[in-house]
Length: 367
Image 1 (tube, rainbow, N blue to C red):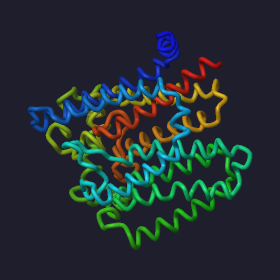
Image 2: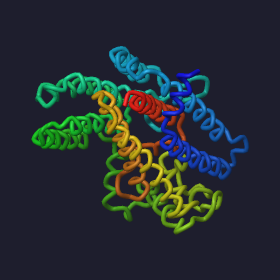
Image 3: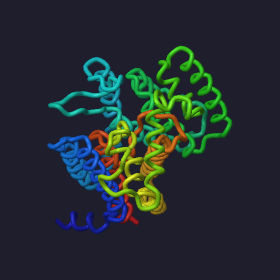
Image 4: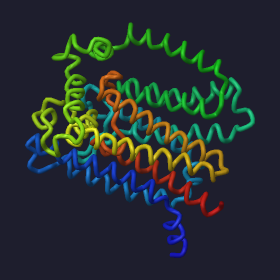
């Protein structure tokens, strides 16, 4: 009991509050969207509530579980991650053209969301255990080779957005580790070559059109550019204080597809306006600031790498999702952390916050 009291006393309640408020924002909008779709049973809303409760329970479990246990289990977690990504290609369900979900008792489990955690732990472990030779080309190549299977198996689904995120996690960790700039120039050139090859030989026509529409948004608003156009209309129509919950024309009249997942930021902007969008940004800033501020009291390389990687992932997901909503980036199906509908995403995000909380607690106790 004394240990529990000490842990709760050193728990970062400000970080938790910012996360909790984002979850509440998401639930309000998912409820609003469910009403507009005529879902009298509010099934998606109830599912999200259940997943958030599960995620919060796991957050506290991981907050009180020594993160070194997770660190020392990384080899088994990595094998499990590869096995899950391989199994989903064989036994998984196909949703919107992507074979990336397991159907468990009517609920969809998307393993790539948990694979992101495994990759972060793996790279944090790899770089923290090689602090002296961390900047060598050999370490760069090895880290890339152990990340590659996760990226390729995700791309084969095909889940291009998640594959890009996994790749960016690796690039971000290289930057945090302090690798020479010349390596990033080489990687950029290699990425351009791979991108050109994928465009020529791999991308489907609809994927190409999504990218082309970004540069010519007014040419195909009723076809490939429809989703992006409706999202931008929703964002702009909210003005300063919004139209009110349940009164957004784009979301309530079903003009905005995937309103509760890819375009939930557009729904927030339409119904809460610039004020609501500003609050979303504020809560994310608080999360990022509290995580980064905590690293000042941590003298464990693995813990620092892990926190920075999670912050990088949250920022990248937030930036990509919001940029899709305002027409800056093509639509690639990236959820907005803590807000978008999706059990796997919200549970995985809360687990990462739980591990960070444990790191913060231990750093305060040992400081």
